[in-house]
Image (cartoon, rainbow, N blue to C red; front, side, top):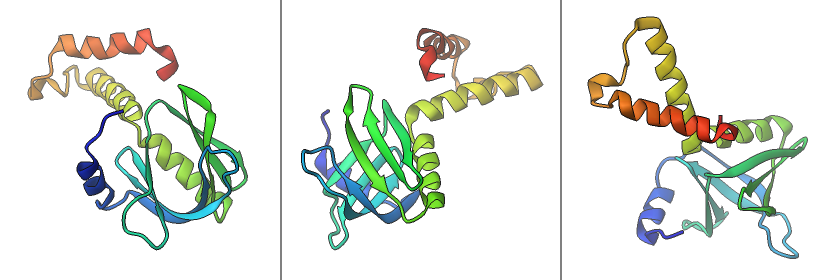
Length: 155
């Protein structure tokens, strides 16, 4: 994936939706759990050494699977490479559940599905398309619905 390093660093400095020091391992041979500052900003999960201001890595939370592995452990793997897992060990089961829920809500696909659902619900209740006033055409609405039919596993 191509990205602008300066813009990514700027994004990493933005206020986080969620942040905590938790133990993490990356999918490298011999990788062990290490304490990291983990910070969720929009749909990126940045991770830092606890004593450094710049991230050592970032995960784009798209086309990924977030799985609760154990009571206080969750993992992130990507659809294209399911065998490569990033593991995170939280201080408690409650903290783990909070992270899993926040990460699942962070993806563009989740937001897109939510928009389609609520748009349809409002249209059923009012008889009007709530996004029409913003210049989003009926045709675009059907394209969103068509994509949902083409990829039912995303729904």
